[in-house]
Image 1: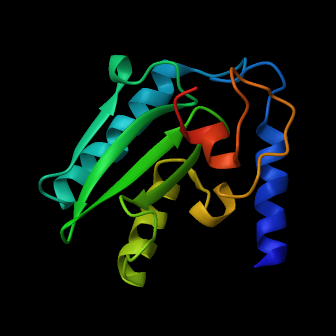
Image 2 (image 1 turned 45 degrees about the horizontal axis):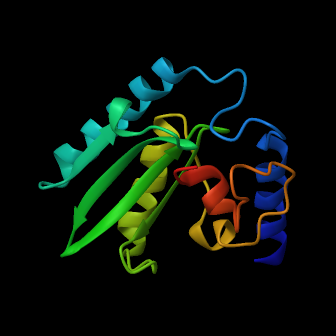
Length: 148
């Protein structure tokens, strides 16, 4: 895990921008929201009771869309970052109880839609980048997947 975590951290550091907290200079919001909507529609069709937000519902954030995936009595939160086409998920209790089959299906779906999955355990590592934000970032998850 240490080597894999290092690879993810290197990837996160490569996409960090010193002064741009919400999105990098080359970010295409319209294309990102369109890609995200296609993913969300596919997930909502597979999991009844799921919903998603993008567009005006997400402002002042380093992510552009979130899906509330209804899964066996839990709500799995999926967020797509404005950086690096990163995507992640976690449940409302912040531990993942997804069966391997479901997790693999989600990861394949993310790839199909052009995303790169970042595991929650990597995102909980302390932020070591140079972007100060408004009040700093405690971890990589806050840097790439939260309201700023």
